[in-house]
Image (cartoon, rainbow, N blue to C red; front, top):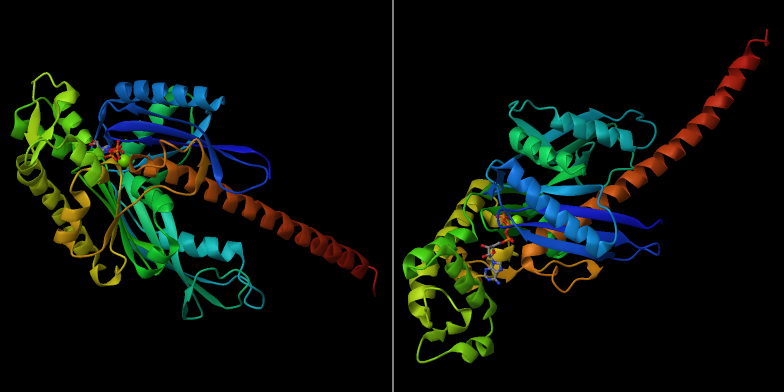
Length: 424
Ligand SMILES: Nc1ncnc2c1ncn2[C@@H]1O[C@H](COP(=O)(O)OP(=O)(O)OP(=O)(O)O)[C@@H](O)[C@H]1O
Ligand SMILES: [Mg+2]
């Protein structure tokens, strides 16, 4: 296997993150060789609202990642998310082309094409068609039908669509910088790629990526994605509440929130605990000159109601999906917002299912900073990209093999036809 660089860019509401991984010759995990996160501008709730601002931040992030990696980024996979994302499940049926032989790649492609042949509004675009299950001659539960024999092939797919305008806007920003877009991946799905285990997906699980401006939800049952959506609320709403509640600026509120988010263990909290229920924050040097805050006022009084509201919205999505009975693995929460103090505890109470923090996995190299929840989408993106390249390479190999077989059969056939002419 040749060395390959795979890059991913996550255009988030809080940050634009770029990550470069290298596929080593000897295989194994992708090795991270460069990354960057730059404060985002011009993105609201996952939507591009100012092309120039986004292009500027994108350029900065890509350049810094390039410098770190020592490689130019000419092409990248891109995340897309926000409330303009919608999804549905669709079924495709085809007759197997060669019923005497085996099911081949082409039959699968035709079945998937049949599933995606549905009319959608011309303001939307399909970004992903994900096969969930194959059915061969009425037998369901087949994950890979290649090589099986049958006459009728059916496929259940999950289709994700996005706003055409937003995709065009992202492409405008990329074109301005000369970056080739290798494909869009829904940001929730890319996070799922790196934080969920196969067992969780098999049993049934909800991936929740709490970003700054939106919350992505992906539900997996029987090992495949069954529902995806994006809620237009995020961790920035918690910052706003803190700013209003404590009468401080948004910048100060963000500092307070991040500081509390880092005090996840009791030991860390004890270090800054003053008297009963008060935490010292004078070290943050806020312009409002706040020296300490009451945890009860801030965490229980200001932050908790918003976190409860967030989980109620997630609960509504689970209800909408009608998969509530099929998710025994509960929720896996990732994205920067997952680090908010009290997030998991409050979530457990509202949802009543197991909840764990989702940390990205599956890469090596410069991983100190990137193996953290805010990078879940970006790390998942390059892992999805790698899978995509591998399956494309597999198809090319298969195609070469079929082509070789055909050319031998074809020339033999032609030879036979040639000699037939002389036989009386
Ligand atoms: N240690 C932390 N403690 C608390 N909150 C945190 C922490 N780190 C990040 N956050 C919060 O997470 C949010 C950003 O998350 P993330 O980087 O996943 O968003 P994004 O991907 O840019 O946005 P989106 O996915 O909504 O478009 C911010 O609101 C930030 O305050
Ligand atoms: Mg995000």
